[in-house]
Length: 50
Image (cartoon, rainbow, N blue to C red):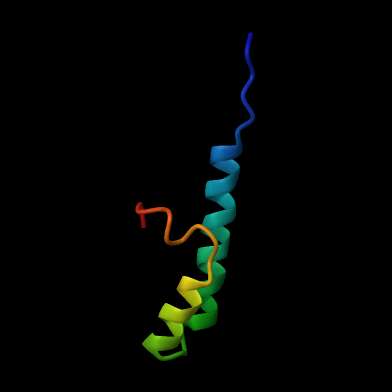
């Protein structure tokens, strides 16, 4: 049978970890810094699920 690597779940886990760490970092920052940090995340603009 064909086995596909579970990259989707791994990528989702990695992205959730990145998002939580970013949320911890930008919590005391102003909103403009939050938006700038969010724009630097790879794949943040491609994915519309957030």
